[in-house]
Length: 274
Image (cartoon, rainbow, N blue to C red; front, side, top):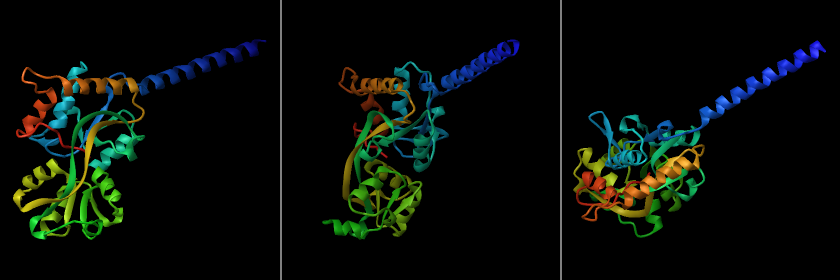
């Protein structure tokens, strides 16, 4: 009887230990606020870019305003800057990660949870004017050597146009693509319109030497949350975004439009998706 009692006692202790470990692990996995998340973006001016050691841009300012609206004491110093393909993989595989700004394509719909849109804009092909590119049919498009950033939504748009992935020059960032555009080793660059203009100019090139030769698609950008993040937290972000997009000052300018005008004074509409 004594041995049975001791065995019973050991089983109870073992059960309590397992329960404690389980509860502890469960608590560790739970996200309680925006502070528990890792925010990942890329160099994509004027939406996200580093200057003087600080990450800034339209999407960054918007995210800071979202945090403030949610009552969170956070700032851009916690944002991780990463090549797009690496950040995209992390957001898919690592719990508690957020990737921005992310194009909400049908192919990605079930891969993430979403809050937004936080921007909208056009994707197109940029080429040097002296290339004299004229695209009137799909056959013309298929003859071109086109560069694009890996995992960027422009890649899917090119695939939808009939190109094969092996025929697209894929790079982790836009810098080598712009270099190839300059020296003629690619015919065109598939990218966001405003970002393309900004980065060509920042590379030292004369923007007037380039032109948009083909319109791919209009698209919207969102915050893309890892699937393990609770719906309630994603919804809190959505509510903050909705407020910022609709809240107007006495002149009828929304909070979001004011952010955009800081970086693009001549326009109010955002134009970034990846």
